Image (cartoon, rainbow, N blue to C red):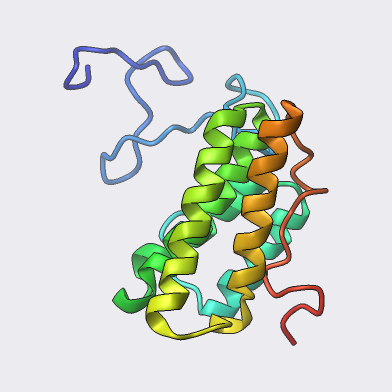
Length: 179
């Protein structure tokens, strides 16, 4: 029973799934967009939580996942950087995580939520760049990524249909890969 009195069933119909330290964890398999699948289904491997990566590893792994149409999983990579990175970079990583979640929602068909999160992430990442004075932190073309997010938000609102996450994935380092 949770604090609200709700009972959550795990794979055997028992108590909520928990990790080795007793924290609630949902062990259900998920699809490429992070939607839960029935227990026993073949899902997409989940990103391990709490992985400390270098910024280069974060950008490379997130881009790989975005390119594969797995923005939900890319958001988890950005979230790790947000939580483990230096305080002065947290807003950058948080904004990128919001962009990935916005793409997730737009691909799932939650167009209103997707557009809102795309704009929120673009604003957070853009504000971080303005405040820090860094135009391309870790090679990320934040201006181009923010513009991508605003354009995608407008498109999903105008078109009224979900998008293909892989086809609409942003290039974090621009067309040249930031190299």
